[in-house]
Image (tube, rainbow, N blue to C red):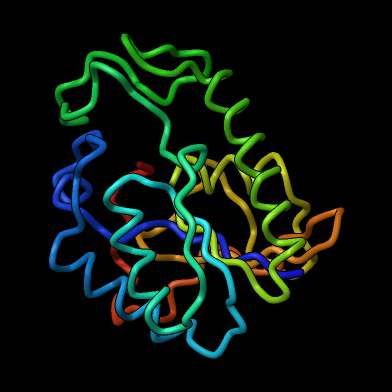
Length: 203
């Protein structure tokens, strides 16, 4: 069983370092990244796609769906952490670190609630992967990728070291092998991009 864990393409708010709103679409650069990712993963045996239903993830999943012919399903559990009233605010204008341990954003999702949701999302990914008959692509968001890699899989010897803070570039993908115990065999690969300088924040 193989799962490709993918972060969505770049958006304008990524580039401008603003906490994302749900309807944020991909930028031109993000759409190019998504197309490059789709071409790169064509022929990798992906037969199912499970994606967050937020706009930036949907736009990333569509080219992959087109190149692989895989059935695509949208799963709200894979949404990025909800930062509530902070969404749409630039990082430089924040009075506190929204990623600080235990911080609960006003009108948003606590860290504990977010991790509980990711646990349910990961269980759903495993369920779909079991019945896929091939590889599963999971298109989601930076903090979700970080939570899965940090708490739900074991790193194989030789996989890229996981440093803190753990960051995932736009359209980078990680490879997880199963069955349980699930093993991370590749972390944050972005070989499909011409440049590697595209980390724009975790959301």
